[in-house]
Length: 127
Image 1: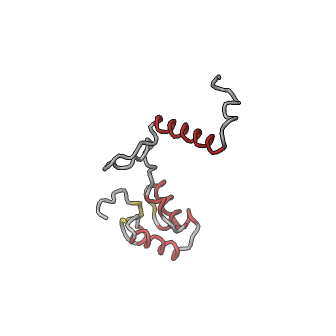
Image 2: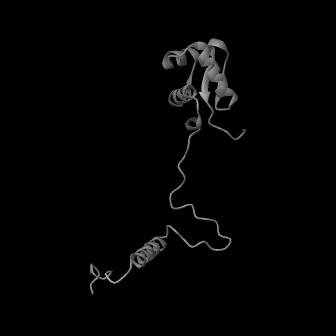
Image 3: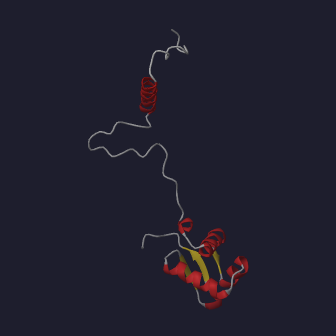
C-alpha cells in the first residue's frame, strides 16, 4: 500500500474516516506549535503574532471628531479657522466637536480665541 492509495479507506465507515482525518489534523496542529495542551495553572498562549496596535484616534466613534483627529494627527497642530476650512464644517459644529475631544482627553489646546492651536495628546499617563 502506498501513501497515496485511494482505496485504503474503502473498508471504513464515513465516521471512521472523519475520525482519522481529525486525528491527523490535530497531530499536525499540535506539532506546529500553534496549539498546545493546556497544562494546569498555565495561561493560554496568545499566539506568535503580537496584538495589532490601535491608535487613540481609531477609537473615536463620531465621524466628525475622527476627521478632526486624523487632520491633527497629520498636521500636528491647527487653529480653528484652518480646521474649519480644511474640513468644511460650520464654526459652532467644529467648536462643539473640539470641546468633546478636549473633555475626552484626546485633544489639547494652547492659546485662546483666534490664536488657539489644537493638537492631539501623545501622553496618556495622566488619565
